[in-house]
Image 1 (cartoon, rainbow over the protein chains, first blue to last red):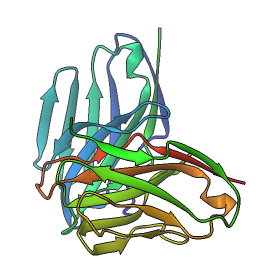
Image 2 (image 1 turned 90 degrees about the vertical axis):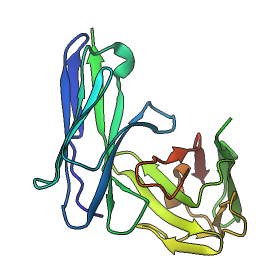
Image 3 (image 1 turned 135 degrees about the vertical axis):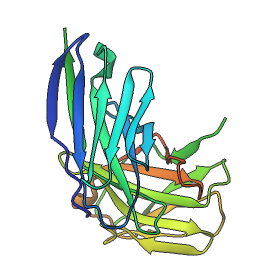
Image 4 (image 1 turned 90 degrees about the horizontal axis):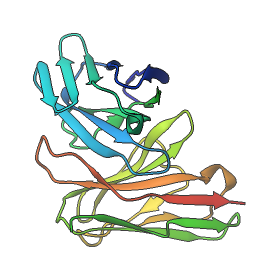
Amino acid sequence: GQNIDQPTEMTATEGAIVQINCTYQTSGFNGLFWYQQHAGEAPTFLSYNVLDGLEEKGRFSSFLSRSKGYSYLLLKELQMKDSASYLCAVRLGGSYIPTFGRGTSLIVHP
Amino acid sequence: EAQVTQNPRYLITVTGKKLTVTCSQNMNHEYMSWYRQDPGLGLRQIYYSMNVEVTDKGDVPEGYKVSRKEKRNFPLILESPSPNQTSLYFCASSSGSGNQPQHFGDGTRLSIL
């Protein structure tokens, strides 16, 4: 793989903010995706970053630093339904098909 | 409705009995992929295709075959399934545009006894 690293598991409290980090090898970087996946279901698209900076979409934001090979997904005002796995996927070189990290399992508790 | 359709959704079978998991998309996407997902290992790419008659190996292709005879279909073939291929499988498709994400099917849970 392309050494895409994410924490395995995180826990947070309903209503709080959580940041899920993703690091990757920078060589040939060509875009980064975040997906949400509930247990036993298909991944669903959350965000895409290809330039440095923050992309905001409602309660979810995603940040990218290309020079550092680093991205994070920020979830605000956490709800119980946000309990899921969050997958970081990086596109490298000329490929339009990204490689996935192992995912971060987020548990939101009351 | 734009979708990726996989069949079957669930299958229990025995070692050595050839099986095919079908995948069809109705979005006219060029790119299609197969992944397997195992606990602690995330989504690992098996094979991908960038267009009709163009396929290539992903990270874990051993024991699998694919074909892309039509743009909409990308079947996954297990010629002689073994227990280590027990897994959750996802098919995905995407267009060639840079910021367009992959669309995933609902998954196929295979159990090889």
